[in-house]
Structure formats: C-alpha cells, structure tokens
Length: 404
Image (cartoon, rainbow, N blue to C red; front, top):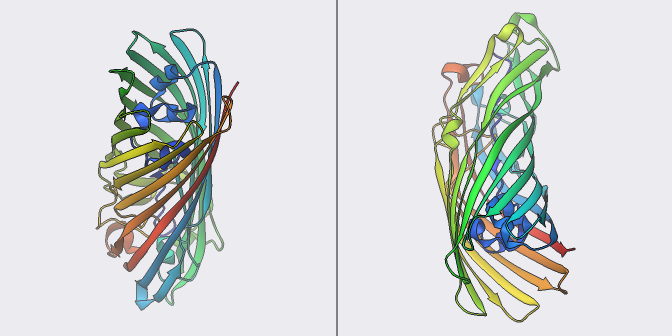
C-alpha cells in the first residue's frame, strides 16, 4: 500500500502528427488532406492523393513550465521546481498509394500520446512522483474508397504499443520517517481502429468526420525498490495495470475562398472519461495502489487560414482552445495540466512537383494550475501536497513531402 506512490500512467494527447496541420493549429485537419500526414486525422483523405507520396515530420516540444511553493508531508517545502516538463522530439511518417481511381492505401507511424515529467528526488512532493515517462507508438495500415465523385470513406487498424516508467519516493521506515525510491516499469501492445468520411461539396469546399477508437491496455512489468522491507510491503515484484487511451471524435471543414486564400475550422472531442482511476496490482493480483483520476471528456476548437503567395510559397496561421481533462481536486504533479490557448503559424515551400517542405511554430499559453491533494484514502501513505504551476510550451516543426 505504501509502495506504488502516485503511480498514474496516463498520457496526454499529442496532436502534432502533421507540421502542415500544425501551421493552422490543426484547423480543418479532418478535411484538409493536404499531404499523407493528414491521414492520422482522417483516413478517408487518402483518396485526395495521386500516385505514391511520402510525408516525414518531426516536432520539437519545449516546455517552459515552473512549479513553486510546494508543501509536502511533515511541512517539507520546495520553493521552486524548475522545468519539470522535459523536452522531447516527436516524429511521424505517413505513406499513401493510389491503387486505382477509387481505392487508395496508406501506412502511418505515429506517437499520439506521451508524457515526460522529471523532478528532484528530494522535492517536497517526491512521494507523489519524481519521474514519469509514457510513450505510445501507433502503426496504422489504412484503406480509403471513393464511393462517389464527392464521397470517400476510410478505415484503418491501429496497432498501439505502450511503455511506461514511473518513479517516486516510498516510506521505508515510519518512526523516524525514512524514504526509499520506487521504480515501476511496464509495457503492452493492443489493437484499435480508425474510420472516417470525406465529403467534397464542391471543388473548393469539403467536410470531414473521423473516429479513432479507445484502446484498452493491460500493462505488465515490475516494481523495484532501492531498499526493500517486507514489513511495509516494499518488495520487488511483478505488477500489472490497466490503461485506456481515449477515443477521439473529430469534425472539420476546409474552403478555398479564391486562388490565394483558404479558411478552415475543426472541433474535436476526446473521451478522457475512460480514465477514471488507476489500479496497480502486484503478486497474487493483490491491489497495492489505487488512484482516483476522474478525468472528464473535453473539447478542442480551432480556426485557421492559409495564403498562397505564389506557386511556391504558402503562409499558414491558426488559433485554438484546448480544454484540460484534469479536475482540480485530482490534479497531480505527474500531469499538472490546465486549459491552453494555441497560437500557430507556418510556411510551405514547393521546390518542384516532387518535393515540398513545411515549417511550423506554435506557442501554447497554459493557464495557472494548482495541486491540492489531501492525505486521505490511498493518498494517506503519500501525504498531503499543495503546489502551484505556471508556464507555456513551444512547438517547432519541420516536414518533407515527396511525390514518387
């Protein structure tokens, strides 16, 4: 009961699967289909591509988040936690191939959920988490069919691999209180699906809708301690935990006003209510930790515009509002999340009919957030914790699209 600490294994959605889409704050992502990377948002858009195309994307995520005024058990105090959200690079690759006039195929590799937070082992909330890493990798083969001149359908099989590493302090000796370090590791591979439809009202206007299923995982791994004691249950052992990555429902619109200007909009619902709690089981399936998460379903809204300077250059801009799934009374230092506003811009350069490059930048302004955990229930062993957070996130993206 004292071992697992706040061992939650929930990621947050990483939308950055297309640098071109990021330039418009992902407005119109389900309807845009500008290159194969958009197939992550709607597989039906594959029918918009001719021949064989490759899209390679990379986005650097630079968090500038600061925690401060953390008060933990026994009056432990940390005045400042500098940059607990680590930097990361998010890659993605997508390929499309036109089989005939009606049928197209695609294959993508994405990392749609992820988490990296890192604190000092001696900070006031160490019992609630010192390091959290969650990685997911999706391999998605897809098919798209043009049913009529205006209507296309698409579907794909999502093979998702998840790995998680969580570290935290754990009470090793009660009187006086001494702490050891706990490390939990686990992984698994499971399967979901994605479906979508694309309707081209005219040559200049199209609408898209897509659904990406939740995937139910059962991670298996182990927990180890720097110091073990059977008296407090701190024993190295195998563990398991269930994790559901949420379903996504997206709707988008894209419209060319004229040869120069295009506008787009997007709305997406993420079904985070599937992440209600996290239960860690050890040897003989005994529950060694349970964390109430009570996350909620949330919405993402975005609008964008593009301007074609000439046949080679295109400029992009977008604005978005992104709700957090985290409730104020269950927020933890592993994911000190809050509502965010996105300010995006991008530029596209077309070398020739074969090669196109995109660059994008997004500034995400996050609202201030607070952690206020009470020493009750399963948190009694970890102790009360209060802390404050503020910050922002910078996204830098580059992509190359090649037509064979």
